[in-house]
Length: 325
Ligand SMILES: [Fe+2]
Image 1 (tube, rainbow, N blue to C red):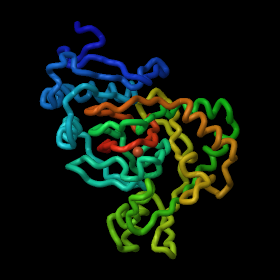
Image 2 (tube, rainbow, N blue to C red; image 1 turned 135 degrees about the vertical axis):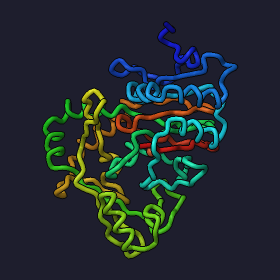
Image 3 (cartoon, rainbow, N blue to C red; image 1 turned 90 degrees about the vertical axis):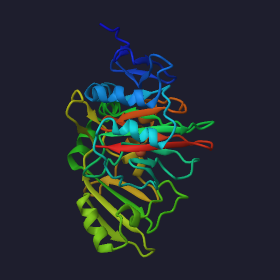
């Protein structure tokens, strides 16, 4: 039998990275490197992944984050080959981030200014359907900052229940409501500058309304040509199958509460207690894990289990993304 730290006829070996943590017995992220540094080409990597897709899928579920490091993944084309090895279905991105299509299933992660912090979120958390996996590829590592920190979501729920048992129960019972204002056209000077015409893939308001409803939201049209989307009721936490009954903090209250462009309240309009939101922000930061991007890194995030964000970065930085069902 192969030793525990090697997989697939010694193709992969476990490595380590700065910032790695052990959470509830699991190493996050799990780092997999080529066991033989000379055998790090994309063709061999894709072949190894294809050989046992379920095994790799199981690793993502177990560790919530898996980082492939040291393989010769150079560009969007090779990254797409890695993603396609799994045959996971694609899911179209709906959300505030301005993104550009790069190649097949590969998109830019967020065209918004690198100096902004993209706050922690489960990808497409407010949509009816959201990705199970978010796969990221680092083509150009930032010289400073620009990490993609992530947070085991159940840890946030655990701490919030510990500190605010009554509030958690009440908000869970009442549900949440969010509003978000999107401009008409794309504005890449903002990380939330994606216009509704692009988001709903139409300039026709009636059609946009129909598409919005299909995604579980209502639209109010604004005088400046923008759209205010209203989403709710939405849950505070969710439990997904195969995730050890962990209660995930599946909401975006900290990111949207009391902002110029967005709001978060209880579903009946009741304000959220300010100290609940403030403390939640601290807990998310306390529980965050981050590593330094290296060229060629491919990170697989279990979007059911992790919140992720982006730290402010110095240019240049190029991280590409594929979202999968
Ligand atoms: Fe994201």
